[in-house]
Image 1: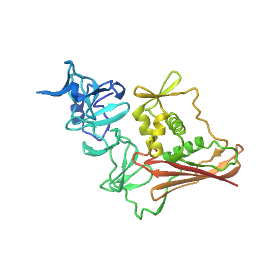
Image 2: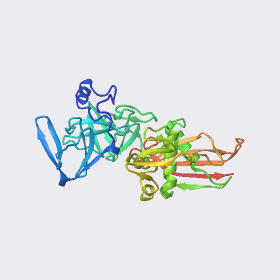
Image 3: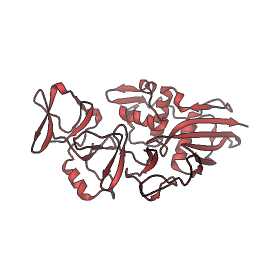
Image 4: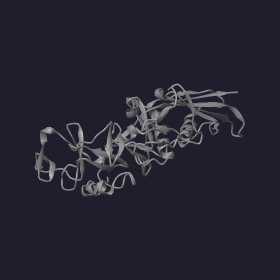
Length: 339
């Protein structure tokens, strides 16, 4: 875990990061190494340097994340809780508020820009966020776009909100070369495993937990997501990151999803040797059209055989989701029809 790296290269003043660097002592800890402090065996203490936590044994946490009364805190190398500062852990950025508690599901203004923290506390990047009935785009550095065009071709105003130029029911074309559109189609290709010319309808919300975990890992592996690593014959992902990625891809996390995770400690494991990651019996051509229709994106393209003869069409539907993996959208359904 790193604190105070240049998270937003040109967005946050260097002085802010100098302050962060002075506190940057939680360097290698992640949630995997977190401790749980109960009110009965730990007491908050304060001196002229700040707040720290003393265990009944006399010891104290340092270079560590600690959960106290349901809130997460990060302690530096001297054992003091970090406050009003950013922390990088497991590839994601988190913000610790005035009390030192990690913030989640909220906006944070830092260095003149706005950032959004998801339910896990991780800062959203390169995605859309729905808040207060409006849509906002968070850049690759996490900063909210203002008065500019987004990578997927939409314009946001001075308040950062998307300016639709029409009603929510209007249809708006999206570039079929958009990376999020391409990734959604790649996921659909991997899902389509039925027999030759057999129509399919796959609804993401009713897929079994094992299938959703398998597809989540396929997406993470295909797109080289930093949250996924390999150890010997296994893919490894922090459980909280796995849950968040399932939610980003499918719009929710179910008890079946969690049950399908092979969890050991704070990580989930998946045998990479047995990892399917293959495509179905057909070829999905590049999409011929992609449109936003209200809160959904419709992606349509041709299905061909392995000699590239057109034999039908596919339709991928995405649904607007906070932090959705596909540019602020999650997978909703796949359907195919044949000549």
